[in-house]
Length: 139
Image 1 (spheres, rainbow, N blue to C red):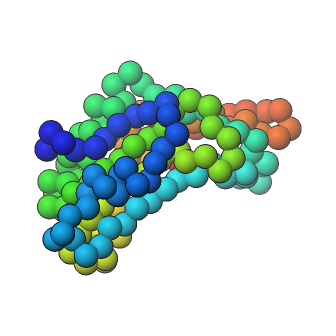
Image 2 (image 1 turned 120 degrees about the horizontal axis):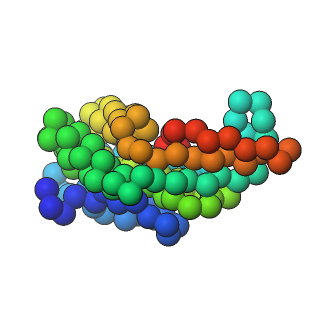
Image 3 (image 1 turned 90 degrees about the vertical axis):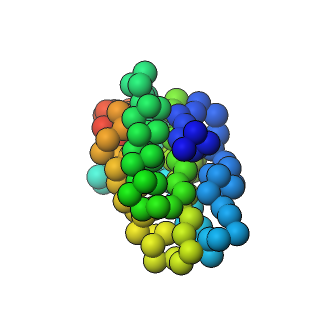
């Protein structure tokens, strides 16, 4: 799957891009997931996030997407943002297309979980009280 969209980006994310990457006339369902920076975590007010990635993170992301696509037989796409983000910014966009919605939802959830656990991306949460913490997580 050389045309598989699996990218780490410092630029703002566009959900339409991931949807276009998986859409086709044979698919009646396209599920697009967007993970946004929220203003709280664990009872603390969050003011901003910063995502950092291992130099090989995009290779890991591509591998995860390739494996999920192969196992499901469905087209998938994912783009993860790195760098400084503010509340409401998109941190990740993922899309899966399928003939029917149930399978698209299931595979999309699996893909997001695998990215979160297998792609070496870390986030630094900056809290409103001036404190911060690093978390190995995706969005």
